[in-house]
Image (cartoon, rainbow, N blue to C red; front, top):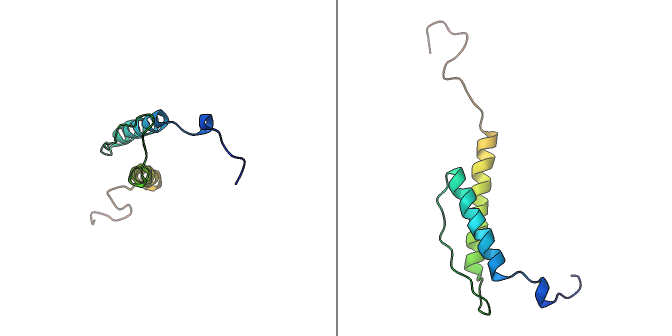
Length: 86
């Protein structure tokens, strides 16, 4: 598992707020709707499994959209070699 960590090495609530904000910026730029996230405070339980699942689902939607764009083939709307018949 690795050595134990001290309190300074654990992620802070502000780190997750920055991640969520950046995810929203990327989603808006790629055409996906923005998500609503909660505000995280110091010295309070700040991340539940539901919130982690929400972040993971947004990342999966973003990946699927960008991967689909990359794999999409551009096609001509006509058939070449057919004279006057579509």
